[in-house]
Image (tube, rainbow, N blue to C red):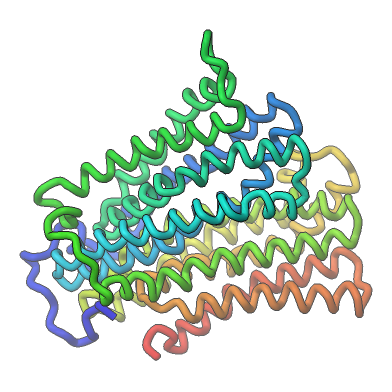
Length: 462
């Protein structure tokens, strides 16, 4: 581990950037909000991309929407891995090096992060070439929908390198304490996509457009521009991290410093999405109305994840910087403070949903059965959102500490509670849908409490 050992001599202040010194010494709450605010602003970019593409491609008909829907889980997995999993590991590694006063090591870690992004992108592209058709067919893709899925994913995953480099460069900047540029760049790319996507999808004048592939090409093009902006910043002389300050050469130790956190962190979204998939499959046994109700109600939980991400990336950087500087107690204080903030926000959302579920359900459906079941789910699960948010925040803090074993245990616990508890509830106890909703709520509580208890009992030090 590259972090400075507790009690080791702290680096002289003159070798630390102003941003790094603030993360080490400034008031925790004020610094956390200063770092998190740009991230929260940037969170509007991804929902904007997703909603707008759905709106544009919906004009092409149901087959186009179905085709892109087949690609969506895999594209989101790539984004979660590159921005949250491996990206969080990069942020933590860079921040720990800077906190220890090792600017040259931080720059070399940035170089290795770009190399890792290149390898990971190649794996996603290769998987699309070799397995794409089989995967989408196994998910139910047929005929025109399958053709649209392949047209969209060939472009999207053919340009996987662009998305990986974009997210890793953003993670490097966040590790240096620069949260503003990645967030502004994310928003700018989303706004450019609004103008470019319909042009490439439908065409203009003599240009006929590329259909669904045009939407993927638009995302690819704007991310190229965004990556170029961030690369320019990281090539600026005098920056805390410089991509070309030292010759590029691979080091097993530096690769290990990123991958020992990045690999388990990249498994985390796999476990999280598996829990959602299992929940969806089990709730489907109660009928179409229950499935629709759960799909609408649980969508609210997707709002909690971006909130946690906004504060979580700031937590990763702050915790990692303090661990690198040999200040583990301050790192823990940062983690608990950030966890409390996220728990308060997500808990308030959950409380509102539990007390007035119709405010959410009425947006999506007028079917009384669906609204009733969905409202019942929110009434039961809403109370668990605070602890779920706490767990998500502590996940990001654990990335900064370089300790990913317990976050994986927490995610596996959530999956086990949903899978085993749900099966028992449905097939042995023959409970109604409300009974299964209790199991889902308990899985969210188990996730948060498992990780919180592990850290409280010394999970970062043993």
